[in-house]
Amino acid sequence: MVKCAERVPCPCCAHNGFKVIGSRKRQVKDEHGESRTFVIRRLRCDQCQTIHHELPALIIPYKRYAAAVIETAVLPASHLAVAVDESTLVRWRKWFLDLVQYWLFILQSLRIQLEWHETSTVDLSSQRLPVHQRVGQWVGKTRGWLGSLVHPVANHHFWIHTRSAFLTRSSFDTLAVSPKGSE
Image 1 (spheres, rainbow, N blue to C red):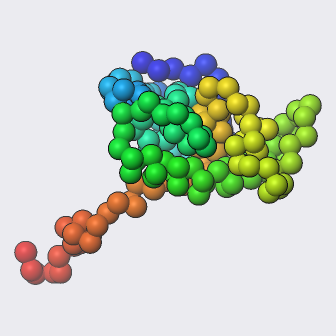
Image 2 (image 1 turned 180 degrees about the vertical axis):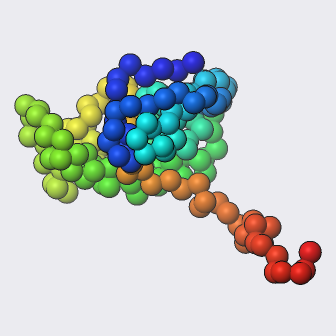
Image 3 (image 1 turned 90 degrees about the horizontal axis):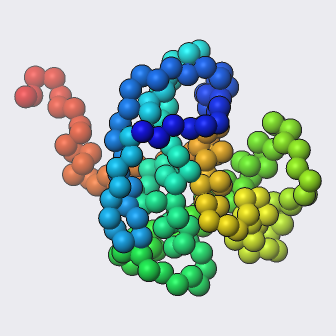
């Protein structure tokens, strides 16, 4: 079972009290395409009663591959030895480039709101630097940088999920409620 060592406030109400209400299994694939199963705790906030899942840094919300695999794939000109389709690599890179600027500005906002005091000055508004250098200013360039980037965003309830992006027209037809009397 995965258990977090840090105390993270509720993303919805900022309360620090959680009750463990169960767990669920979560499969994550490595660079060889082999799955590992983790048991993730389900937590309920004592104050607002919302349910959260406690994800370790090696898991990115709503992604099936480990964070290390995805962070290798989104680096420019990186040599890949990953067991995924080319279309998956293209989707990961597009996902990252579409959201990285948003994540960086969320981190900058959290820094101001939470009065994070750091010795270095990070200028996230500078568009002159390549995106990976701007990310490196915040979370470094060592392994695990993607988890360090996305987890504060998810933990503070700013995560944009794309689970419904792959619904087709036939999925909507199946989900549609039939009119009264026509069963």
